[in-house]
Length: 347
Image (cartoon, rainbow, N blue to C red; front, side):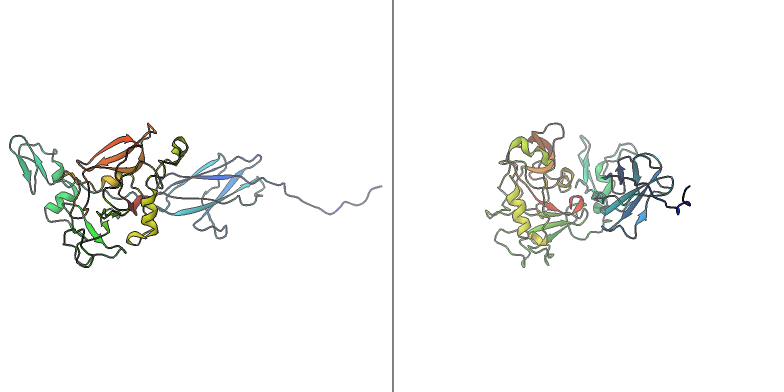
């Protein structure tokens, strides 16, 4: 004989928790990846803007039923997002939350400056300037650079600026603590002062949002004559470090660390600019140097490093020659100048 049936007892099969990884693709998109879990019918993906898995947003609707990737789009630029995932079976039983993974969307690229050129020429009739500076005889649709963009607007008196500067450039002089100089009209003097408006430490580009180091002629860390091999903090591609040892790779750290430790112009995020950032202060209407020296004094007509290496040859890196504004690739071992920047897309 047998006993009566026991009371019903149920149990849920244990479901493995997926592993999670992220890739920030752009200013508004992150790709979510996870490992496949056997016996799973679908996955639940959750997102938050803080590191807590309460009050979460379920971002996949309907939930992901196959595959191991999900593209999360429509996000806010330069924002850190936190993600979790669960694996669920056909009975709607789900695993615990995965370990959190987080990443930040890209910053919005900074707006470009114009070239500084407000004239054009046509041999042998000479240069044309002012409104409609394209030389007579050019077909419609072949207007020159001087008829386009911020420079043309400035030349026509139609560009509103926060500060001053040649053509479409818009610069403001800052003192050593980041305060705007009261008098923006004075020329630089090595024996001058901030109060007189004849000495400043930084330049703010009001169009790009970047803030630039101003070079001095006093033998300090910002001296115009100091040169560096390529490499140091904020250099792109730090995986190159073991190839070369440490002697060259710390080359510009004294300048970067010294500026940050001294809170130059009130900031502690100074770095070597990427290629397009340094290009943004080249004034192609000038040579020797190709920059507005009313705002960037003590600028030798020479080469300046960017933090951008040559993707095709690890021995080289990009620089700009401020004699004529051209960018070039040269050996990382060469000693040339460095001008620091902060803000914008790299901050």
